[in-house]
Image (tube, rainbow over all chains, first blue to last red; front, top):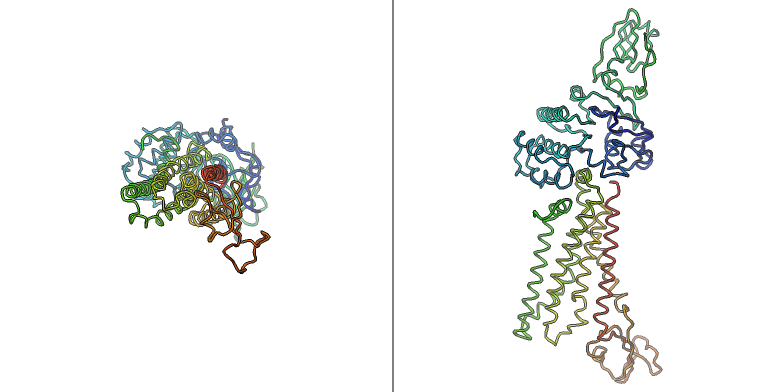
Length: 293
Length: 281
C-alpha cells in the first residue's frame, strides 16, 4: 500500500523536553486521519515535522518517500498546511491571498480557488481582516487546497469557529476529499466532528504514539463489557477504561472475546478517544492479544 | 505591480508601504538638495547656507532611519505575527523566500541611496568656496552616503532575522549602527591611508596651516626638542606644531576604501540574515 507519511524513531526536543519522541508511524494514502491527544502531546510538533517547518532531532520523516529536510521543494509542492488560528496576511485582499498562492506554488489551480470563493460568496476584493472567522478559515483552506496537495495537514482548523462555520468548513473539506481523494491529517479536540470525517485514528500522549490504526478495525476490537464485578477475572484482553462498581462493572476493553454471561456494547470514536486519553499507560499499536476462531 | 512575479511579488506586497515611503523621502531629499544647489549658483552667499546643517543631519541620519524602519522589520515581522507558517508552507523553500526579500531590500535601498547621494553630490559641488566642500563634507559625499545606507539596511535585516522581534530589532539596529559609525569615524577613518606629518613653526592655529584641500587629522604643540609639550604648558608665537593631515589627493581614494568596507560588510550581513532567517522557528 502506498504511504503518504512515515517515520521511525522520530524525535523533537525543546531544551530537555521531548515534544515528540521515538515515534514510529505510517499513514497510508487516501486516509483521513484524526490526530488527537491532550494539549502538549506533540500534535502540532508532529504536523510541523511532516512539512519541514521543524528539523527533527532524531529520525528523518518521509513524505511520499521524500525527506522534508533534504528535498523541501518536492515535499512543499505536495503538502498543504493549515496552521492553528488560520494565519493569513490580514492586510491582503482575498484576491491577493490567492495571488500569493499562485506566485509561490508550481501547481496552483486559480480556477478552482476562485470558484470556491464564488461558491462561498466571499468577495475577492475584500480585505482578509474584514472577513468573518468562518470566511477566513475558508480562504485559508482555499489557499492550502489551491496548490493541489496530495497530503493536507490541518492543525486545529475549526477551533474558535462558531458551530455553523465549523460545519461549513468541514463540509467543504469533505467535499474536496471526496472529489480528489487526498490524504488528510487533522488535529482537533472536537471528537464529534472527527467522527463523521475520519477513517484512521492516531492518538499521541506525551510525545509518544498511543493508538494508531484504521478506525473500523479499532472500533471492532474495542467494546464495552458489562458484567458482575466478582467475575472480573474472566475478562481477557486489555482493559482500557476500568469501571468496577460494587456489583456491576462496565469497562472499555480491547478484546474480541465476550465472557459468557457478560453483555457487550459497541464503542464510539469518542468513547475510544476518551478511554485512551484517560489511561496514558494503555496503547493500541499491534493486534489484540486474543483472536478467537 | 504586475511585472513582479513569484516570491518577489510577495516580498513587494509585504513591504510596499515601507518601500514607497522610503522612496518618496529619498526623492524629496534629493530634489531639495538639487534645488538648493541651483539657488546657490544663482545667488552665491545667499541665505540658503543656513540649510547646510539641516542637510547634514538628513544625510547622516538617513542610513540609520532606513536601517531601523526598512531593514529591521523586513524579516522579523513574519516571525512576530506567526505568518512565517504561511510563507514557509507554500511551494517555495524558506531560503528562496528569504532571499527574495533580501534581494528586493538591497535593490530598492541601493536605488534610493543612489538618488540621495547624487543629490548630495550636486549640492556639495555647488556650494560656494567659502565652504570647505571636500574634507568638511566627507560624510556627505556620494560613496559614503551610498555605502552607509546599504550597510544600515543589511544590519537591520540581520538583527531582525536574529532577534525575530521588530521593536527590539529596531532599537538594536539604531544602537549598533551609531556605535559602528562613531567608532569608524574616530578610530579607523583617519588612518585609511597613511597621514602626512609636518612640523611648522609660527602658526597661530592648526587649521590655518594645513595645506589647501588637505584634511586635518591632529595637531600637537612641541617643545624645542620636538617632544610633545605637556598639557597646560605656556605657548609662544614660535612654539612648533606637529601637524597630521591627509593630503587633498587622498579624498577620493579614502571615500572609495570606506565605501568598499561598508559594502562588503553589508554583503556579509545579508548572508548572515539569510542564515538567521532560515533557522527553525
